[in-house]
Length: 347
Image 1 (cartoon, helix red, strand yellow):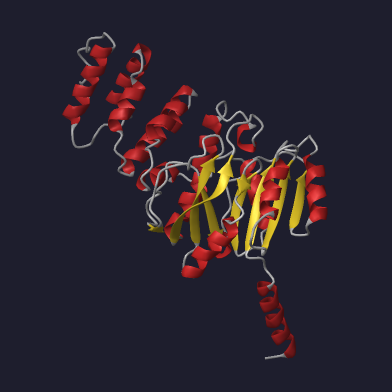
Image 2 (tube, rainbow, N blue to C red):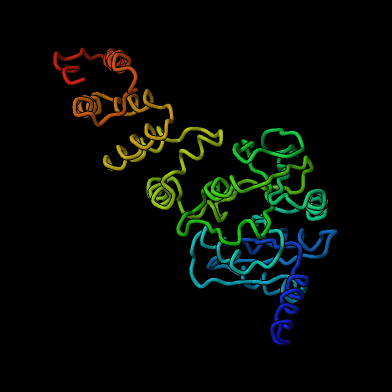
């Protein structure tokens, strides 16, 4: 091997050794008053091998000045000021693009780690080098109680998402180095978790390592009017990952097909709604009855539904046409209508 080649390998080894064990990414938007709490909680860690990357997502207040202040306090704190507001997922990607730590996690700009957070994660990591995702619990500041469902400490399945509430997740850099959040989404981080789920070896510690402060209209995830844009957001998500709703269902989470189909219909996107209905049936997700209910919410919807039924555009249980007929009759009676003579002529 040439001396130049040996030197290159040596530099790579030194570079790896000099990497911090942890990268904490904080996304900040209009948080000049509360951001210091999050930063101080990182500074207070009882384990010192970390870097903290703070992404200022185009805040019009003095958030950038707060970040600059703490950059002077500790060189492990690194601020990035974005000129425009790019949204939570794109801001997360900015942090991931700069992360050098062997383990990576996100901290909300108004939450705080407990002092033993990183040392507890390291304790678990040292138990099994094959573990690439470590979960821990949050504590709600307002109630003092643990957030989410109680799952016993230990290894978790790579097929099922075990939690019904917010948890802390630390991922090995090697697991997510080629993964990014969908640009333009204003939340929906579950898509990221489920996308990497099959490749994870997960361990849950029962320790509470973070305090969450709920509420606040200027939280990054609440600052875009998500309810108003729910249809656009879901349409964007499903264009990037058409299997996402099926992935949720397969991971043991709520079946979202009926809800999202309803949003598509409500926004006049019948073609998209029908595409999702067919997708659900194709993937074996059991929700045909729910689709019938969606399409027959009122009399005008029922007339459209009946026409679609005749043309084979609605999703009936393939194994039981009789079930579909009975369900239609029930819905008609509920609406105070009587079946027309040709209601079932083409079924």
